[in-house]
Each structure stands twice: as C-alpha cells, then as structure tokens.
Length: 370
Ligand SMILES: Cc1ncc(COP(=O)(O)O)c(C=O)c1O
Image (cartoon, rainbow, N blue to C red; front, side, top):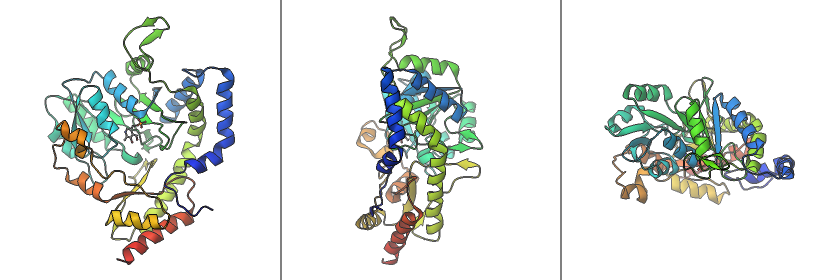
C-alpha cells in the first residue's frame, strides 16, 4: 500500500474502473458520433430517474448550468441575486456574467446560507436567491422557499457539490425553479473532464436551456434565439451513465469514512464538524472540519505524507474581483471565522479505515505536542 494519504482518489479510481471505462469509450467511438448523441439523452433520462425530477439538461459545466438557469429565469441587468459568502467563485461569477449583481449574505456555522440573514439583504432590485448546498450539505430549503414565495423571488439552487444528497427522499436541487450540478473531475459524479447538469421540474425552462446549449438551433438551418455551445460530449455522457450506477455505493463508502473521522475526533476540543441532519443523506464531495491553528496542523500533516486542502481560505466577498465591484458589504463574521479554520481532510471511497485512523492519530498528536 502506498504510504502517502492522498486527498482525492482519481488514480485509484482509474485502476478500479479501467476495463469498464475502456468499454464505454470503445462503444461510443465505434459509432462515430460524439455530439448530442443518444448516450447524452440516455444519461439525462437516468439522472431524471435518480433525482426524481422531470427534466435534466446536460451541459458543459456546473457554471454553465448556473448561468443558464439564471438566464432562462430572465435574470439580468439591474437585478440582484442573494448568494452565500461560502462557495466556489463560480456561484457569483455566474450571476455577474448574466449581467446581474450578486448580494453576498453571511452563512451559519454549518457553512450554509443563513435564512435569518436573507431578509436583511433584500432590496427592491432583488430577483432571486441562490443557495449553495456546500460539500453536499443541503440548505434549509423549506424556509428559503417560503420566504421567496412571500416576496415573489425566484430560487435557483447551486447543487454543484450535492449530486446524491437527499433530504426526506427529495434530491437536492429539485425544490426550486432549477438546480445546477457539476460533473467536474473532483465531484462525486464525474465524467472525463468538465460537465454539468441543469435539473428542473419546469417544462419551459428545460426547453429554453436545450436551445441555449446548442446555439439556439431548432434544426440545422433554423436558429430561434442566440445561444452558445455548452454540450456535454458523448464520451463523458457514456462514462457518467456508468458512474451514476455506482454513486449510491460510493456515497455510502464516503459517508462511512466521514463518520469514522467524526467519531474518532469527537472529543477533541480543537476540532469541530457538522453532522448530517435527521433524514438527510449528505453526498459529501469533501470532508471539512474546523481546526484551531489550522495552518500549522496542515503543515504537520504534510510532513507525515497526509494531503489536505483549504476549501477555501477566503470568503467570496474578499476576492479582488468582488471588492472592485463593491460586493464586500460585510461584516461577514461567520464566513470569516470558517475560512480561518477550515481544512478538508483526505476523503474518498478508496480510503481504508486504518488510513483514516492514521490521519486522526496525527491530528491528535499535533494538538498533544502543543
Ligand atoms: C459550489 C460550486 N458551484 C459551482 C461550481 C462550478 O462547477 P463547474 O466547475 O462544473 O463549472 C462548483 C465547482 O467546483 C462549485 O463547487
């Protein structure tokens, strides 16, 4: 066994799946068609069943899924969209690129947008709320949806990190106008490169997005509106079809590992974790904890060949691009506190129990030595 404890599993995953992936690739290449093929529609249908949602449109990325949802919802110049301060930059980038203004809201201790703070962010320009199901943990959608309904606001879910997360049997991203999922290589459901999905129960939205993703082409010689190229390629679709069948088992394995971390470190005063809510399956893309003296801990673990990552060390409001646009309207005490302490531990389905125990021993060892 390799002694290094890797943060992600892509090399091991390749070893395990090599034959099956090769079969997927051969099957598609042998047909000679690589764009908008039957494999793409089959994958979308499979996602619709998995998420129990009426429509899935596959796209080039999760970022495109966010942008297209906003675009199709008619959100643009002069509109404001409320977003959480803890996310990947794509969440606010998508809002900026449809011409709207992101309004950044602080999060709760569980890393998710704070519904109690949303009201303070609303102005007469507010058009939408964009909650993010960070690391597969689902936002308080009943409260957010009820608030939005009362104010006539649209809700679009950033479910980029939550493919496979369910609350009371409902898949993340399916309780609002639309959900945007990422199939980036580091996500739980990943293809051969970039990829994304828009899921929606809204019939017309799905139709608009199908047009947008393929230059607005109704037929080869018939352009209805201007769109872009945001098609998921057939090779990725075929691999994603295969990998979606594995997702429930992978989610279980990853969650078992996360529980082991939390049980092992529960009594450690210097570390804290958020457990899933009752009735929730969190498909954790990453396993995050808050740690005292985080940067020193990270270094100490690296010395033991344990890879960790900081996701992220900076709230969205504190990037140069956000500051220049006047988006840093803080204070954002909770987001800032999280960014100062957050550390993602190695987390993937191929991790063995003794590897998790080794990481935990080293975390304990670090604090004991202080
Ligand atoms: C929360 C969140 N939103 C959006 C995205 C964008 O997805 P993609 O990389 O597929 O464009 C990501 C990707 O990391 C993400 O984590």
